[in-house]
Image (cartoon, rainbow, N blue to C red; front, side, top):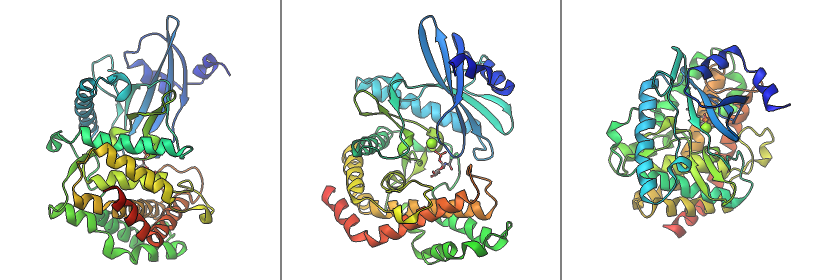
Length: 374
Ligand code: GN1
Ligand code: MG
């Protein structure tokens, strides 16, 4: 199919949305893009003279992100801060951070209706996002990038940021929501999930460990990304270096170990997030080590001894919390995460819990690896 033919298939709705933005050139194509569970993403191709230009069009899920003004405000403030840092380090701000196009009315997003806001960013060319670790080097690069991202935001005034999803990584709050979902059992699915529910209940005592350290000021609040999946970093196709951290919707004050932990959860798993054969799920210690090294290098010595000590716990709690969220969504009727098949959220929950169990088995080795780089 030619690019032109793809363009013909664009729905009237998308066409109308694209019309709201100030985008130069001739429209050549539009196709679905990426593998996010929340927003809808499209790749737009335009031609200006002989040059092809690409953009990313996104529908921000208004059910999940209730304060679009706050969210886009966060992103523009944070990217402005990052641009300054990148320029000061002789980097290329157009490739190393996201930039958004304005609508014809000069706004950073187009509000289609209360539930649907749309935005357009420049596509970072000659760079890729990966859903699985194909080369350990890519994972190492992502680790450095997320560590460095946090480092660049260390002097950003966190109080200026809106909490786009309150209590996003507050595991005890997630646990309370889960317990209510079990009790309500609106879809009559709790009986089927007995083993998973028990798995969660057996770990109740650990749920609050990180939040308690933050609340008791034993660990600092930092500006964190909070959704540090490998596919949220763009890797330069030529140099192989991590270029740009994307998906900035959940930048909020948080713990450094959230970012570290969520990356381990996703990237150091030997299987995909929705693998149905649980014998394939495990924590890869070599990948765990590579990420630990890269993340600490990226943080450039800025983590406190307590934060470093809690890295394994961050990995475990982010994995447990994510499994808990998938399970809660399954119990509530799959209203939050997009699913592609029946029981998709239950499958995702099971991989997360299998990974938690494997982390528990490898706890000692995880601690030793972290100590080696501290
Ligand atoms: C969601 O949108 P996406 O796919 O990057 C979710 C994360 C989960 C992740 C699980 C706003 O991220 O918190 O860890 O799915 N984002 C939101 O894959 O809830
Ligand atoms: Mg994403």
